[in-house]
Each structure stands twice: as structure tokens, then as C-alpha cells.
Image (cartoon, rainbow, N blue to C red; front, side, top):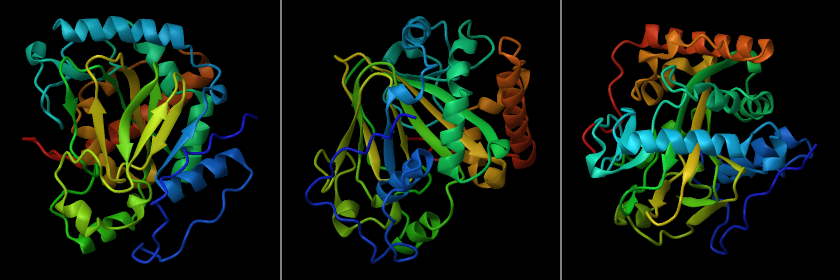
Length: 323
């Protein structure tokens, strides 16, 4: 089996900080098992990059073609599920006249290429890594989100944030949330070379420093930051509560598939992060009839877990509705 790609060399200033982590211990050295090695790297640094060779069924030319067609539809207003400029978080309007930076709901049944995207989402090897990174069995996996981050129509960036912790959280509140399991795996699959994700390695295990709290929300040189550089076909998994931001270049082509998969072990904790994107409004309509039998059965079970999450959750609200 292909070996894991170790995360890029960490900045000289970065040393794992264990003094204010939830358990005060450092992560062990990565073991030789590639799934365990990926989990160890994710736990240690908050992100891990896996090579394209691990996922031989990902057909980049076909995915690029489908992505290009859908992005064109989104920019011209015929695909209503979009991330619009300059809004950072859901919900987004459906009017692309101010420009877009993302395309939502790749697996929506009304997308003619939905099966092309879904085959990469329900890929057997990807799901093995997802289960290993979450720490559950494949039987426990829950369908969540599959969207796409694209070249913006104007220069655009996201502020420094953690996906599930508000910026006004105290040190104690941050540490309390970071001590809990994440109950999901989140990834970027780059269809073209991509250097848009910026992270602070190790920040998923500690509260923000005084410097980070005082920094400008769009600080260009946060101490210890690292740009996660992906080659086409590589997959970056990252902890969604690592301190991170996105910096998007309107002159550089970008089509990066942005997915997440959860587990039935933590559906209540994941409900808002997932359902605020509106996936529950159409997922139950998906029949997966274009898949081979094995993938179809996996996908149906994961979809039913998502539908059940929505049934139990009620009104879940938004992370930052007006931002």
C-alpha cells in the first residue's frame, strides 16, 4: 500500500504545546499502519495530507469536467446552491451577481453529474481513512456534506476561525470544546494545485494565545501559520477546530472538493454544522441507482443516518448567520 505523505515541515517556531491541552500529553510517534499513521498525524498537527496514489479510483479528468460545468452554471445563475461574495458562512443567497467562491450540494439529484461526485465521496478507500480518522467503524458512518471551493470572482479571504467555536469563547470554553471528540472527518480534494488553506499547526489542542486573540481577523502572518499546499489529486484532512482561514486568488483556477462525513456516535453534536447547509432538504430524495451494488448499499445506509439526524434535531440555527 502506498505510504502516507507526512505533513510539510513545520515552521521553526512550532513545537507541540502540551501545557494547556485537555490531557497534558503529547501524541506518540506515528505507527507504521497507514490508517493509524494518518490518525496520529491528524491528532498531532491538526491536519494530514494523503497522496493521490492512495485513491486510484478518483478520475481527475472526469471530476474536472463535471466541476467545470457545474461552476459555469453557478456563475451564470442556473445553479442556485452557491457561496456568494463577500459572505463567509451560511446561509448564502442564490444570486451570483456579486460573485461566488463556492458551489454547494454536488450530490443534489438535480445535478446531472451528481453520480460522478458521489462516487468520489463514497469511495471505499476514502471511507476506510474516514473511519480510521474518526475512530469508528465504517458501519457507523453518516453522510454529511459535499461542496466545492472555487476561484472567486474577486479577491476574497475568510477570517481566522474555528468551525465550531465562536471567536468570543473564553480559554475555558475553548478547552472544554476541544476536549470533546470531533465525531467527523473533513477534507479537501484538490482537482487543481491548491494553496488556499492556512492553518496554525497544533492549535486544535489548545486555547488561543494572547497574540492570536488580539490579532486582526485577517492577519496575514499569524505566528506559526502554515499554508497547506496540495497537488492535484491530493487529499488534506483537517480538524475543523484548528485555527485556520482561507485565502483565495481570483487569478488562479481552483476547484477543490470540500467534504465531511460523520458518525452515528455523535449525530447530535454535528447537527448544526451539517444541517445549516440545507443538505437535509434533498438528501432523502437520493436513490443511488447509478452505483454498483456495494457502493449503493454503503451510500443508502449513510444517507439514512443523515435523515435520522435531521429528524431528531429540529431547529438547529446557524454558526454565524449574518457574517
